[in-house]
Image (cartoon, rainbow, N blue to C red; front, side, top):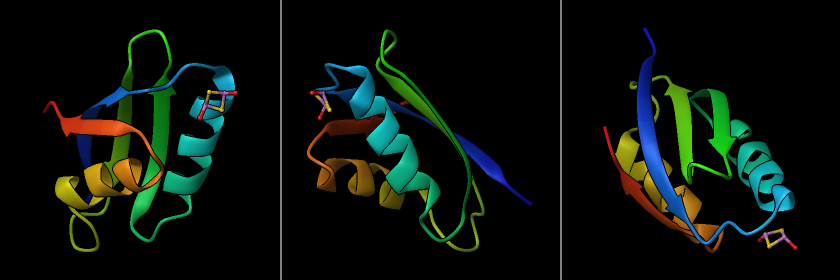
Length: 72
Ligand code: 9UX
């Protein structure tokens, strides 16, 4: 049912960045779970592929003002 995507996220400089990305992403339709690592510069997202896709998740992170790319 759900899929996992790993995003590389650039521009995070403090723990509040992590909190805002996790908070905003987890509120998006189709997102089930979000875990962002400040030290690794990554975000792992569990999502429902019938609702949203990796490109949509990547774009959502960029709209928050960060750089984001799909790793896998
Ligand atoms: Mo910390 Mo992140 O003051 O956008 S919240 S740098």
